[in-house]
Length: 241
Image (cartoon, rainbow, N blue to C red):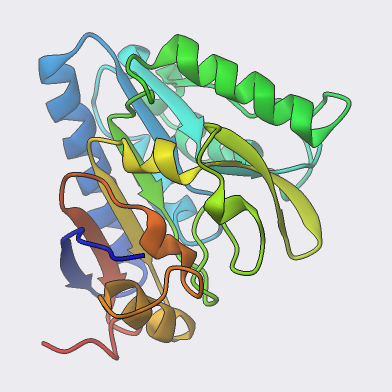
């Protein structure tokens, strides 16, 4: 599948600098959205890389009571499980002032099946976000060393799902609820946050126009606007200047 999306790569030092810059980019996106609309709807990534960014983001002085926070994907675990992305947001973004004023919409993982949870989350997104498909103002995505993003793993069915907003994926032996490519691609602003030398080859493939989207599902995310890629120097080691 050809990918005509443009990427803007920004390199920063690892650690504190990466977390600070990611928080700045997200905060700017929220601020710009709220200048044009009454509410801002964002979808955030799970994982260890963005957690430090969310802690800094929560300290940004924004009208958080006008911000709806969703998750790009979630593991099918209880809300208090250490692997829960929602729990990670509660202990980072929502543990700060004034960020605790944001409205978090966690994936419902207490339902009978992951399929029911996916359907319920899709309905919530339709209620929160206008448009068909619904339009999120900003999506922050990670990138796995295998080329996955959200829970769109290579070799699984989820990356090719186009008839739903949310689907059930499988990653590392665990069911996951994930936004699908059409929903992610409808966002006004998409940011990939990539850290560590283990992601260098995956990042090179993401930016390679000849690379297969089957091998690197993150390439399926194709918004109409330029994607921002924020990478530390180790992750960007294989990129040409």
